Length: 204
Image 1: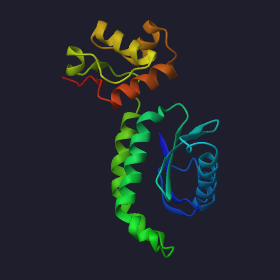
Image 2: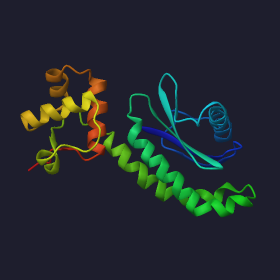
Image 3: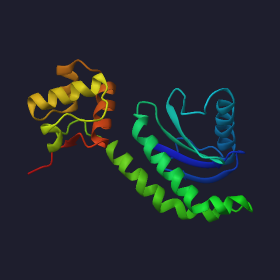
Image 4: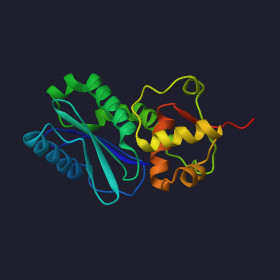
């Protein structure tokens, strides 16, 4: 699940912060200063920071010339699709406020108008991350007729193979028949759900 999202100036000041639970309750300016410093360091030695991992969390980055957006998710979550949402939020922020930031007076309340956009983008992510362990999964109709264009991981290939063979399968089925660990099966299935390759079976 997603815990927090921050948008900061490249100099470390927190411009925008949205908290979705209290698991990480640290002063936003303190944490954005740290996250921005990591990004500056990464740019000096490489081409920037894609993500930072701790024991429990992932911090997923998106950057523009003068801002950095970072989302905190659980470590077991697949960062591929939260990255897309973070980039969309970053681009929207830039579109709305890039000119304002040129002469920014330090008032962060101006950026609170991002709340609705951010919540909408991240609600789809959190709904995908909802519990579906006991729900049946099936292939989308288009995927039944043709092979997905998306490059798939071996774990994702196994999920698709089993569902194609059985018609429907639960996460427990995938673990049992394809010899995947539950975290691997869950990550693969979540990514396939996000990319509309598989879907939850709807009740009749």
